[in-house]
Structures are given as C-alpha cells and as structure tokens.
Amino acid sequence: GALVYQYPRRTICKSGTSMRMECQAVGFQATSVAWYRQSPQKTFELIALSTVNSAIKYEQNFTQEKFPISHPNLSFSSMTVLNAYLEDRGLYLCGASSQNTLYFGAGTRLSVL
Amino acid sequence: AQSVDQPDAHVTLSEGASLELRCSYSYSAAPYLFWYVQYPGQSLQFLLKYITGDTVVKGTKGFEAEFRKSNSSFNLKKSPAHWSDSAKYFCALEATGGNNKLTFGQGTVLSVIP
Image (cartoon, rainbow over all chains, first blue to last red):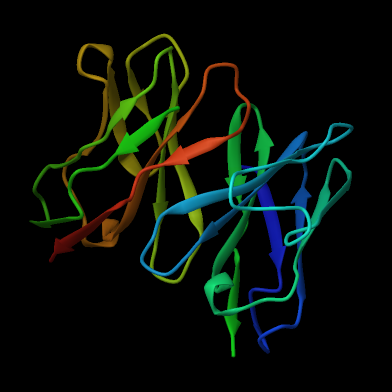
C-alpha cells in the first residue's frame, strides 16, 4: 500500500502556543490531502481537504485562521495548530489520496499543557 | 448530509469464532464505503473498500465486507477471528464522485479472547 509519513509523532505545547505538523506521501502522487482530528474518546473529524491547485476547503468548526495548511506539491502538506488550547488536544491524522483511497500517516498526537 | 452508524461500541468474542461488525449509513446516492482498523496507540490502517461492482469485497488480513443496498449496510466479517484482530474498527463513507472526504462512524472496539 501507499506510505504516508507524518511527523512529529508526538508533541507537547504550552497553552496559547502553536505547533506545526508535516505529512509526506512516499512513492505516489497525492492529489488530495485530508487532515483529520480524533479527540479523546471520539471519532475522526475532518478539518480540511486540500487539493493541489485548488482552494483548501475547511469543514464547519475549523478555520484557516486556526489551522493554516500548506500543500505546495503532490507529496507534501503541513498544518499548523495556532494558539493551541486544551480542546485542541488529540490525534491529528493526514490522509493522502491514492486510487480513490485515503492512506493515513501514523498521526501526530498533540498534548497541551 | 451523510452519516455512518456503528451501533456496537464493543464486541467481545472468543478466538476461532466468526466476527461481524455492523455498519449502516445514510446517504441519498451511491456511496463509497470503507473499513479501517486502529490498533492501540496507532493510526488508521486501510482494510477494504466498496466502490462499485461485486457487493462482497475482500480486503487485507482476511477481512471481507458485504454491501447491502436494501438495508444500507456494510458489515465487516472474518472467520475465524484471531486474538491479534483486537483493535478498534471504523466504517467510513465517501460521497459519490470520490472527493476524498470521509465521514467516519464512531468505531467498534473488538476484543478477541484467546
């Protein structure tokens, strides 16, 4: 299957600070990258869908001002969590699309102190 | 708007038994349907998908799922179950057209007792 590297695996940040996570598709061209969050004891919520050469589409309750995303080419995407607070903690996944299937990275687990 | 329901939060069975994890969906058109598995502390791993054609799809790790349009279901099956199948399983739906926007169910925690 397709490989998706995501880093860092874990990060801890102080409340009110920001952190950036990166996603790399290996061996295939990811025309779309989807960023999801799994909050504690919950399922996966779509934050935004990024397609190269198209505008990034954010879901309700998520904004570019809070979660800016960069998707400069077919193998790389990054997302920043700005001014992180307790409610932002969770597992952030990037999914890169290959042949109508989203393949997910290992995730970045964000803890907020 | 679409939705996915996994009615069983937990399923427990003995190794060697047959497993079936339930998934139903609500969507007005023909959906793309997926199953993913999340092992403890890990990310989501793709198991299988239904796009079109044969309603029984086979995936990795010996799993298969059957798409039933009549009752809007996409149940995951495996026989026999192995203790290593213990994990959390997520059913997901993608709207027709392959826009890569998945709607996930709440997940089912499967415990297989050796």
